[in-house]
Amino acid sequence: MGVCVGVDVAKAHLDWVLGSRGETERCPNTPAGVRRLVRRLCGSEGLDRVVLESTAQYERVLLETIEDQGAPSFV
Image (cartoon, rainbow, N blue to C red):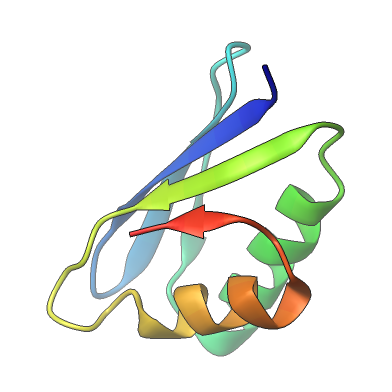
């Protein structure tokens, strides 16, 4: 089984947890913050999926960036 990332989406920030290690972090929900997050996630060995919630369209930049990088995602 691969690594799963869960993302809690808010207008100002994204809180995420990585896999069974439970590594957590918060980043700004801005284009620059999202790019840094996606680079970090794509560098995770065994990334299987990114799970995020739909929240008043605040997830759009993250979802589009994940798709552009070819990372697996589920909304």
